[in-house]
Image 1 (cartoon, rainbow, N blue to C red):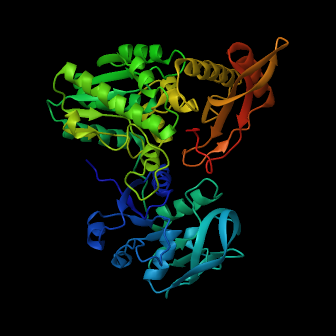
Image 2 (image 1 turned 60 degrees about the vertical axis):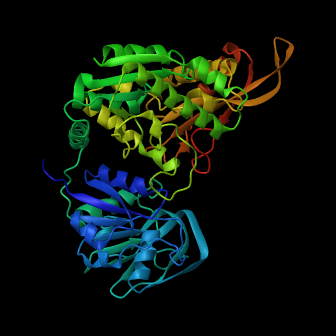
Image 3 (image 1 turned 135 degrees about the horizontal axis):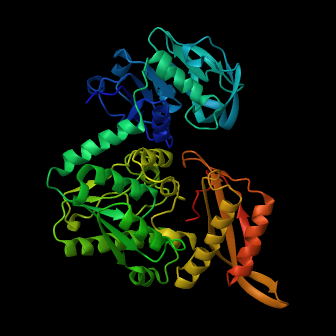
Length: 514
């Protein structure tokens, strides 16, 4: 098999590290995230076309701050440092990094001083996303500033002779208006990539790796939720090993309206695999009784999922491997694989308990973002209706019920969510809005219905637009749509007398409420 060109991304724990990897792959160039601890020799052995140093939460002056091997700058590969990566490059090569007189966070106008191969085709003044307290105050020998702001004299620097560059802003986030141009310049004009990476290539590689891992006789048990991620995982594994795949669908009673039936239909007809439905809803509701803390809910649901899978595996006899549809936003938010803080736990992240009895965990989507998973699904021939289903969290409606989870509360959020989704589709916005759902807030307030006083629940509408789910903006829904949704929910869903709209971005909020 032909070796694809690759860009190595040294991970210093920045929240956007995997987003950098995704942006590189959007340019049809394969990217690999590696620890900053790799030596120059280990990096050279991987034969990259170029190296990108990620951002990170530390100050380069902290005693315990991560520092890569300075010899990487002598390997001859093009290097691009982003934020922390730029500051570290400056420090390691003899420049100076100091605390900024004024911190820069958010949109900042950056003056591009050029000329530089990195900035080809960019405007003289470009809006960029900044997030820093420290900055380069003096370039290393051989470097010169190629961009600045009113508060940051070295917003970008370049050593054109050695093809080493640094930018203080974040070209990988959508808030930087010409970030795609800058990254394209680095990949194609500086690293001379030929753009030989695609979802077809990824599918080929993933299928081959699954076959090599499982072998000619190995069997796999897939934790199937019925969502996009596990469905694409099922398609990949089925392509690799066929009927040796067993899919177990755990119905925890926390799915959206009619979804359990839809999942059973799809995986009884679309995939000729061994399909098992395990109705464990009574167990989940019993274990969630009285629990209000969101992290405790997630841990309980994760624990019960594992237990149900273990029981089903014991019924089936010995199976060799356990598979699940973990994707990278889950991994990042769970603090796995980087030094990022744990934002929330995911039931399908972190491996399996030793007593589960499986030889190995298979997670073929672990390094992909949601939109990449969808593209892969289409490449594998899955229907667009299946591939473009709304994202849905593993813990289901339990984390869309604030406070204790009960069958009645789940009914309320399930019915209101169905109405919201119906109206979004009727207004032809189901592809324009990235994710939309309702939340039972737990707040009760006074209302008047039929000349009678009510004291019932408040439903929140949540709708966001995003292309990576690392950042998200609230969707500007038409007032007519919001009005219809509110009226229908109050009229059709019992014990709801108020509807509110969540207009918070991510960050500071997360997409889900819990």
